[in-house]
Image 1 (cartoon, rainbow, N blue to C red):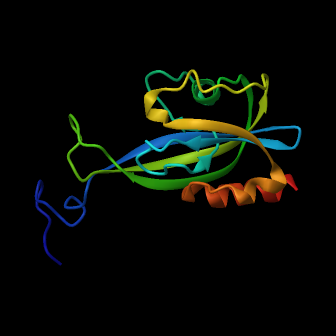
Image 2 (spheres, rainbow, N blue to C red):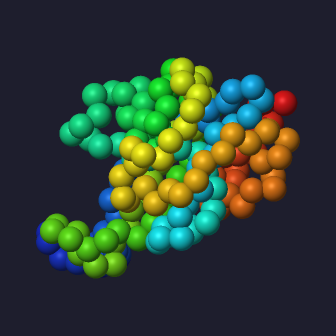
Length: 167
């Protein structure tokens, strides 16, 4: 076995850097309908596809996990929610954008929790979203019609788990 000298590049350090991030997605149900949001044509990864509201944790800004999911839902769809328990964990990878301290070719590994949430308000609005959200629509979709919507690929197994536990 070759020796490993301190500071020498080895097989693991030669890989692209990976940054770990945490996200939450809100499965908000009212009257047998789930709130879905549509990615806009400007979305760099999944233009025109549907998902549920949510996003990545802002480590310095979010006080706790409940605050995080409330903030994400408020920013994306203007609803107030009562966060419920997580029902599914999953992950996906996405390219990292080069920047200070982030070399080109890096990846982001996002570990996410799906949570059932109860809406406190019911009239969604996209007015609060940030430019990076890339949303252009939302809809309350009957649970038995969700299969007709083209979901982002990483959400498909989560949606199956949600629907199986909602039946």
